[in-house]
Length: 274
Image (tube, rainbow, N blue to C red; front, top):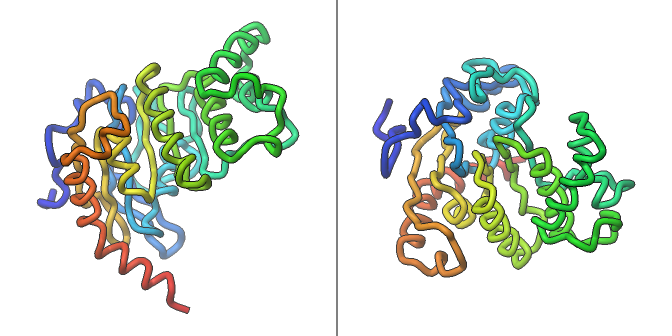
């Protein structure tokens, strides 16, 4: 392990308490190697944010963890089960909502439960609970085109939470909404996590978002990418808008950004090549 790969700010998660374990992961498409030797654990009640320059494989990594894509090296474990395909207990929230336009809010939230074979009585109990949890009570009969982008993402979050997952995977979930809605949703997610803490992996391009939400921030760099640094976010909970004004928040944000700056500029230059 190089000096840049060591965990910063504290000891890693105990293997006994890890909900997700990623060990030596590698992925390539033909001759293109996306990432190499990626290893980390996620605790049962921990939010791990993953940041990195465009094209470093953040979304690919998340889809591998979800079992949607096969890996070429290494392995992923969910509790005591190796991940080779999507597993019960793991739910994903996508960037572009992923709602069915022909289904109401209620039916979109109920979809995962129905796919899991939940009885109607359980669906009737759980769906209103999670619709209320994400702040959509009163909109159960609305269709996606009738509600705002922020409300659509709340609906997608409720659908994922309704199956009561042990692991929640989030792929740039707030990137498609405006800045004000994004901030509202960030604090809504923190509020929900405080009520129902679970293991969460949160992929984002936003350094501020990663520091606000994460207990640890994993920084991916290089081509192929790998874990350059793991930064422990020592900020108290519950986190509120006041957290954004704390000097320690600014220090951690600058530390992550300073780690990424040169790589991000390089990636942008390469993407602009004809």
